[in-house]
Length: 213
Image (tube, rainbow, N blue to C red; front, side):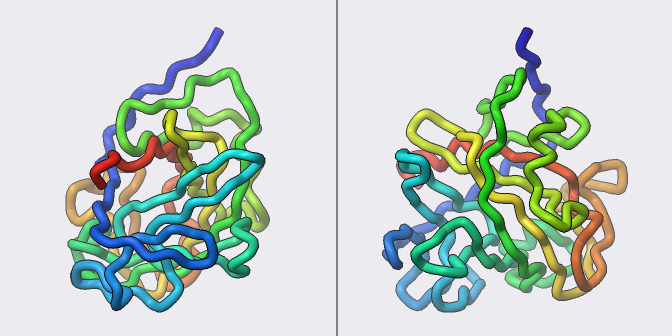
């Protein structure tokens, strides 16, 4: 019997990027000067990646405020990333466009499990208590800081291949989805500079942007 997952009450994360650039076989959506909105994105960081993995093309991103750079342009198994407070999307007490995190993303494929992958929204969360142990066990070491998984997608929707993210805060701030969630939310927490061990334990399935995005 397959297990369904109830939709969690968090904001759907999305990002509409206007222009396209190509770097080392990976597709990125940024303006020509490496900026988007009020954020200046360092050279080499991309909002969206496309790659062939296990014989199939999958996309990854974009989602609000996150930009990625391969550690090795020929190997997309490990990425560096930065996260900005674009439009104050993540924190109400940090300025618009402030850098919140730096971090590492490590590619993984979740094993098949007796569970239905949700695809109702653009981004569909599964919190750790609802997630199969076999999925949680794919976290790289140290597992106490790789607590957020974001899937890739193909033309049919979300796939089980994606990245585990390790968030390292560059400042102290309140993670409250720009004031849209309170202390009762699993997402809400006070962040201290350094590895964010309070980041919500969550696996997100991304069905990909609309064709017009």
